Length: 547
Image (cartoon, rainbow, N blue to C red; front, top):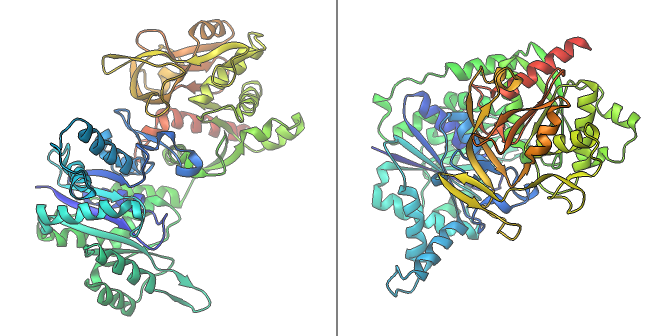
């Protein structure tokens, strides 16, 4: 029997509904239950694929090739359960589906309305593609009161009635601000948020209150009284210095207990096994080593643009009991620096990572960093655009092709990287041109890659012949140029099964120099660090001992 948990937010945005949802999923999982995590975003984009990182942060890519909200990354990292394209929907996608049905005549001449047609489409999403999950958790983006989210709230209200109120739980995440001049927490914002939620017809079952400090018993009773819930269903969510402490904090506050109690499952529920979470906390509470990695990117002003990347570095640090410090360097700033200034920019670092991105801004700075890592023998890791720029840099400075470039940036020069026009996906040929729509048209999701025996890549993946990694790109390195570079020591160590697409390149006679076309950060977990990230941090640690 499936139970449904709806997670809503109020008062202000950015309270951490994604982390809260992931932590709740992990707690239920720790008790032996099968969980499924889903996200409903009310915005009108079809998906976040065309949204600026400065607007939306990272675009997370699922195994089956959906461009989704970054919160799905949290779900996967906390539970280890892969999300699917059916686990994410936007308001734009809902409206698109409704309008397409209207065009096909599926509504049989009815006047198409917000209720019931849009709300029915949302409810279809809620029930779609479920198997035998014990719990399905639905995070609803935005905050109560947002115009875009109104129909989503109405849909879940209706769903709870038709499916059975006892099988549904509404959890409301709010803020308890602390006013220093008054010296107290203020409960009124939470009260007003719940009042607004009640106006939609939804009574929250549990309140999860973000706060800088613990609630007193009297404050807990006050909130419960004014919000129509028992005091024990008012759960404090204290600020934490690590997101990986949150599952244990929630458990100590009794959140999983109250969820199970709501569903009348507490008496029969297995005790939670939180060993792996305690192990992580033990590690991060007493790091044995420390290293510093320079991340040379285009969106360093917004860390959420590199959320999975940052977490993958942290996971590799856990694997080596090493505190990984990240020095963020905007790639375009390197373009105006003197050699002496570049030396100072990279002083004290033990590794250089160049992540993905789109557009021409800062690409020359990426290549400056890549050349620096190559010539100074500093451990290097390039991802997606970071691989493409590493190959362009090598073509310019090792092959002497001074005008080497990508057709993404210029139509002039020698195209070392060019637009992909054809590739296979799910057994079907995908064809793209420069005039193809931008949204949803990239090479997306997991694809196989054959590893060359005896290479660094093969060693990192424990001798595997074929790996599967997630992609998000529309430009690809030229195979003929890549073959020429092999004579200069930049070898192709990973390739598509058809032999047409370079997937991994690495440099011989270098402590650690590897670049990949895919995004390995999407598959890293706190309990299982990705092998390339783990190898990269190991190489950085060796560098630390040499300094």
